Image (tube, rainbow, N blue to C red; front, top):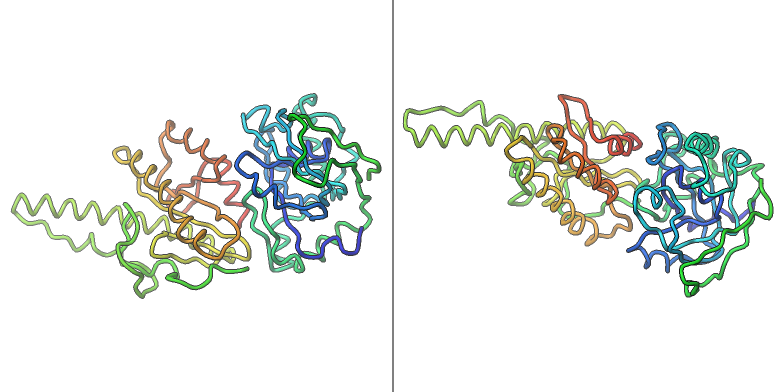
Length: 397
């Protein structure tokens, strides 16, 4: 291992553990359409951690969930052929290739057959994903032994406090043989009509959210389940949930109707607060600082990881409107609270519901996970959700 391998800056690529089996074979990682600007900012010699997330395109729940290796960028290319399972099965496209001239695998890379994944049975892919996951550096180990973990979300980002992880990474790199590869041009202007080469091995082997109008979540009494706060933050440790019990029904029909509407609204507000409190307490117990802003229901921060959540009370009568509204809010508040701020990474975006959505909307929300928006719901005091969303949330704890 080179002595300067983990000198700052160091970055990370995140992707399904089964996709790293493809990287082992071809020697490259890929960025999707829409990320060309990120691709063009990468330079030969840049160092990336290989973050393998939990599987999606193989029937397994145990492989992945941490750093499985390190790579040094050597060159760049483009392609129009499907090579990753997500391209072969999911219809996605990752045309912008980053080739590695050096790869260091923590796991048993000798157990991985260097042939395209399209030629492998699922059982083989599962076994090889587990092989690459051997000696994985998990987020729990990072937090416990280093007091720091990087943001697991986004296709790529800088590991801002790499010095804290260096001892853990160097311990895994010790004794690991470098997998050296030939790579294409070190510039981004290669023209190859979408064709690409497979690089053959020559050897095997805090920032916080900053200042502004933020406060500890739970301190504003002006927010409702139907939208954002109508005014600035006020003081207090929790929002007041007492209103519905104090409603008096009078004999006048107009007053009765108004009081019933008010009671219904207050009941929804209480449920809205309850689901936020469950999520807040869960995140706070895992070391997150949880806040709200003039716009956002909940922003959670721990090291380089940021989470943005919007909570909605839903039932059969309002599910469509509330979910649509929440998705729009997540887009707007990411812009207002993050992109207008001084943060490098997009936050994890979570839609937090009061109950499980109907099957029709669950299918839509499952598809939305590929866009980085995850859905969970609160059942009494338990956080449940779509399988991938729950997996992402659990990785934070």
